[in-house]
Image 1 (cartoon, protein in one colour):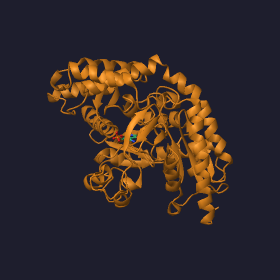
Image 2: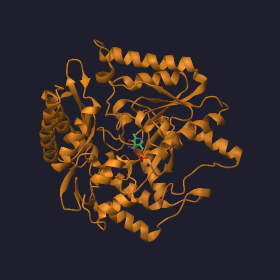
Image 3: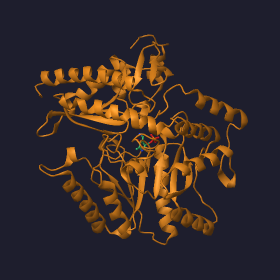
Image 4: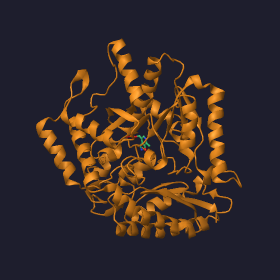
Length: 460
Ligand code: PMP
């Protein structure tokens, strides 16, 4: 990093605490300052161009220079730059966005509550489970089952629903009424010789055993991402969700689908629920709802929940919940324009076409000595890195090869995300076949850099 104290980099280090960053190392390394966007590419402040293979944070579906979204924001800013929807007030963009969402959402959903982030939408979902069960006179039925490797956010309760140790250690989490069940990765958690069908049977039985052990009368909901994102891009077995949902229904446990990453075409259909046969009672969306151009999220609820909470709020005299910026008119206008673009440009059709190529390319890496599994659906995917394919032994964290691959890709103008033992891909939905080729050409190079390091360390 430059020693000039007036440089943006030095001012960054002096003034900012960065999310998900090694803060000690950051003092030396300094920031990568992203200055400009152009389709699927971003440029740093030195002018270097990167293909954004993660769509930012799994979010910028329409790329980084969609003028229509800018214009929608300006139009709304000039008309009514801010207002709220408390106390029965409303704004046209928030009404139109709620309608547009319900038009494309799974049929089981009938009302929309807005929020500003994925974490808030999931916190809100949990509070609604509690309020709903109080409304029904079931004050015990409050616990929510999350899954290992699930990611639902980082607020006090969404962070508790998250099933990743590093989000808990020394953050005094999990907190509150949370139970945990299995992650549905057959590759990582299947027992030797266990087929995918047997694996699914085992997970379904484990869930039912957990419910019976803890008492169904104490469990209000189950939350899952259709495809786990941050927890490793885990694609579940085909009949996993319908089978899990049958168990939940038996014990009147609500299904919350966290569509914060999967929503709006990512998995090849409008929602992950559509791809995986989920009929949610509650669904949360964020990120691609506005192509991440402005913060906005939503919690969609079924008619029975909407009716029960409406009646209960009536009895109490108030629905005492809501965020200042819920349904913000500018964010709503931008989200509405985003949904219009998805429809007009047939984004689902585009994903269907380009994802076949993307998934084939991804699977071509199965020949690479370091790749144990290539998994994904639609335009999301991951390469699982192993030291031994037969025993499925994943790369040890201490080897530092994930970080090496991520940094080498960055050097070569590609942004991907790596955990210690996997590399993730989630490009903007507008990516073309040629750009998919460009992305994976860099991946081939950096996997070889990772392999050379694994060999040097005697791991393979
Ligand atoms: N749920 C999922 C599936 C996510 O991927 C994320 C963010 N990566 C969240 C919730 C939390 O969203 P936010 O960071 O907007 O709070």
